[in-house]
Length: 416
Ligand SMILES: Cc1cc2nc3c(=O)[nH]c(=O)nc-3n(C[C@H](O)[C@H](O)[C@H](O)COP(=O)(O)OP(=O)(O)OC[C@H]3O[C@@H](n4cnc5c(N)ncnc54)[C@H](O)[C@@H]3O)c2cc1C
Image (cartoon, rainbow, N blue to C red; front, side):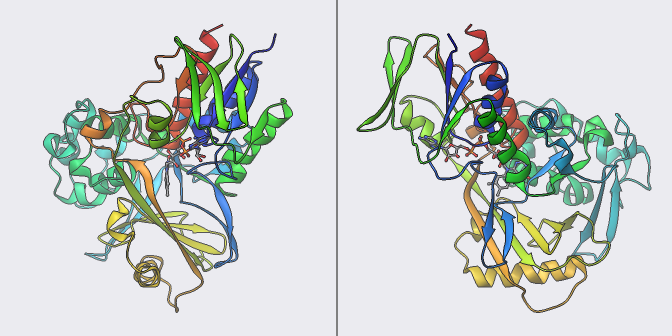
């Protein structure tokens, strides 16, 4: 008889597990609490800008092999687009300098040997001084392992680690930072090509997965929040969604719980999870990017950290954004627009805008919070965890989400 797997949560972790299991012949049932799929990685129509926007600008890198394999499995790898080589234009507001960080397309970080391709005003020794980060322990802070000052830090290490860890880098987990450095900078330009979901996160990473799953007979229920597990001995035997809404599970059926940490800890009392989170702020402006605007521009010394150019829209990302979550929206939009004008070389009054503040965008990637991340296995033999906050070895990223979903799916398959 065909076995059923219940996926709780339709974010990227849950969807990646679902796709893998549906492809392996499982009957998949997805239960999503909200009315939309995609979780923290989704698009929606925004009336203020009259555009479909993403909740946040999401950047993938060519090193994100699990994420790319997931996109391939749902037929949308071509929707992740970026330049052919790993080049990142930067502007420094403090000095007015602009440069192109050219990581090339090698499998080795040969660019650090070339004065023309390195960050301006840095030397080889600056890069070698980052070596202790590469294999640093997760229990140490970045600031305890490498120096967090100087030109290379300000112009490359800080922007990269702030974006990856979503905390001020010195307080971040050196082990997580090391994983990022190993998988990206150290792996050469081939691993660092920036990739963006050209037609929106939902169109590229979410809706095609739903379509594929439905084509395989999966049942996807929105507004279906799991309230309780029924557990007998060491197995989940039932799922309770409401007073009259209960599902009994058959022998051999399994559950992948792919919900955020707070929900997971409520559903599974005693589960250790991260408890602290950080915000990410995104601002979207309806404004045609100037001709030749790069798809992504790094900004040093500004309020804005990364500027993205989309058709009809300029968008910015500000990580570790807790200091901005209570700022009046219009004031924040104006302040960000000033930076956008400076960075993009445009002028004009504030165009139609939208600010999206995701208060719990990611768990806090500090050693303390990282130590609270559980693995995929639980005390129930047929219940597995997925989520960017589980112990993936990476900070909270799409790549980590897909890895966790793949791992949970593999554990379900191993039950057979
Ligand atoms: C603004 C922003 C910018 C980001 N930028 C990047 C980036 O540039 N690059 C990158 O790689 N990553 C980025 N991330 C991180 C990335 O979005 C996440 O790592 C990823 O989306 C997490 O997916 P998930 O499936 O683990 O969790 P979630 O997306 O949180 O999914 C969990 C799902 O479970 C559902 N749920 C909760 N409780 C229940 C319940 N009881 N029953 C049923 N369903 C339930 C939720 O509604 C949700 O849909 C960003 C995140 C944000 C917010």
